[in-house]
Length: 85
Image (cartoon, rainbow, N blue to C red; front, top):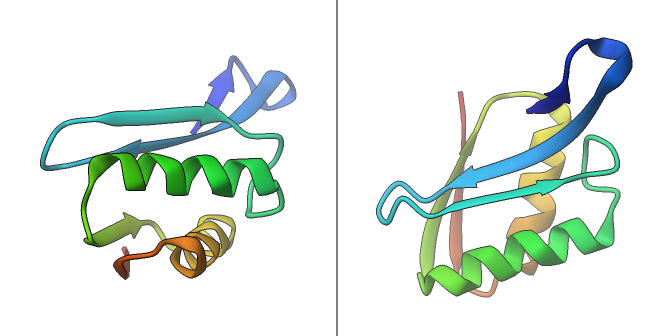
């Protein structure tokens, strides 16, 4: 998602929602994609805090979020299925 009023004044943010518990994770990101190491660590930390050993990570087909999914899947210690609509 983007925070702001228009294209010139927006900041990208990453939001994740756990469908089972309703837990929400949101963080500002410096840019779209998987380029920020600290963002990848925070996403994995959120997933680990949920305690699941198997997760389905759903998203749309935008290349930047697919890059995030792929990087998170590498780092996540459990089983992860990626779904993109």
